[in-house]
Image (cartoon, rainbow, N blue to C red):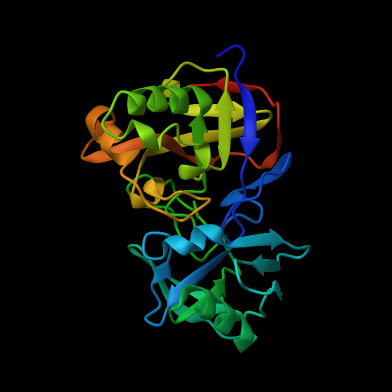
Length: 275
């Protein structure tokens, strides 16, 4: 790990939309600043992601000063959405968690999102990530919270593990689908300069001066089979993960992280294993 460093940073302003790749990011207790503070919900309040709507992969969100977003998608005029005032909240279910979210104030925003997906959806914002949603209590420490990410504040992957996975895919029945890019896994931080699967053995790491603990391995879902440039689905990487990376019934790639100290991370920062 002597040469391990931060290879890339990824912020997803709207859950399931395309991510941004800044050169630096602020690490807050609930994740990277601006990451997944917005999400789509259906008419029953359930979160909508690429699992249900692969076309979300083609939508993008630019993060604006103050936390608003500028939305764009194929065939749609760009739309600017300011942060809504937390006057009215709506119940939202994000997997097993029930939280209160703040809907965008302009009905045109919900109409825009619904028109693009061809389904009745609303765009909502998390106004206070310090209190709205705890981390999974099975793996959390007291007071830890998360934004609209699947379950944990950050996800780390490594370039070496992706290379190893792509080598395995190349030996399989669906080799033509590979090699897969890292965006299939939608991480927040990508580390280079490690051995393949080294992250399986991390308990606590430092990226520059920011310390993070490893909560658990990341179980992967059908989103990883979705081409982020075409929204088309294939079979990989789940087939290969099923053969080579099955742990406790989950197909794993990457590790979920919880920050222990806030700070700023930058491309090229050294990455050290503390435990």
